[in-house]
Structures are given as C-alpha cells and as structure tokens.
Image 1 (cartoon, protein in one colour):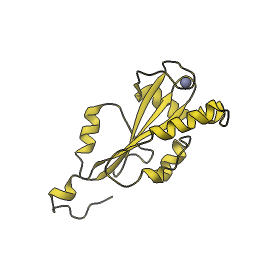
Image 2 (cartoon, protein in one colour):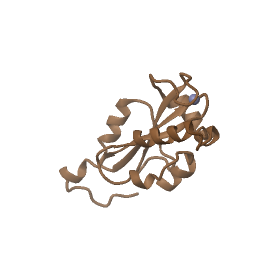
Image 3 (cartoon, protein in one colour):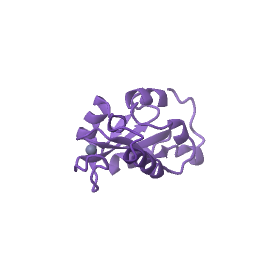
Image 4 (cartoon, helix red, strand yellow):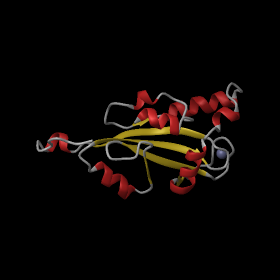
Length: 151
Ligand SMILES: [Zn+2]
C-alpha cells in the first residue's frame, strides 16, 4: 500500500518507512521546519518544495480541511490538510477522509489501518507529510473470533 501511495503522492519528501510501526502518532513538524529553513537558506528551490502532483492538488481542493495558518511558502490562505487512510478494503491509493466522524468509523474497524496527514497549499503546491498514526485493529485485543479474514 505504501508503495502505491508513494507513487500517487510521490511528492511528499520523506521516507514513509519511518512512519510505519507504532500506534502512537508520529509528528513531522521538525522535518517541516528543517526543510523550510533549507529553502530560506537557498539550499532548496521553490520548485522542489511546491511540487504537489495533480491528484494531490485535486484532493486538497475537494477534501482538504482549511488550516488557520497561512502557507509557509507563498503566505496565501490556501493551506489545507488532507488525510489519507490505507488498509484492507480501502482503495490502493488510499481513502481521502474528510470528517472526524469518518476517522472514528475507520478507527473502529477490526483491521489495522494507517492514516497520513499531508499539508498542501492549493495555491503554490507546497506539500508536506505532517503526521501519521495507526487506526483500527480493535479486534486484536478483544476478540478471538477473527477467522479466515479474506483479503
Ligand atoms: Zn502556498
């Protein structure tokens, strides 16, 4: 699943392998600051920062949640957060989740899922993976009636 995602949203500039494992959410704010600092120092170009692919931009427009803060690159108010969830019975390119309700529903699933939050600017194309966390997997503790899970 992750490989597919890296192709689909391949512009997110860090190894997703770091995000795998552990239930606790992983926060990438430090990396975000580091990459922005590199840009301010002239070591990274705007083109490298603002390379959101068409699909990511579309998802940002249609299922992104507006953020209070302005875009760190172009300072417009087009900054949104897109949440992708991956796992069994979800599309290979991930489900784009728009509401807390939907997150809660996915979190109640028996299967283990993985959620990624990507910050995207709909104006300049700035994009960055900001958080990841695991969802679901509720049956692991509670039930032993999970037999022959297909797919
Ligand atoms: Zn921007």
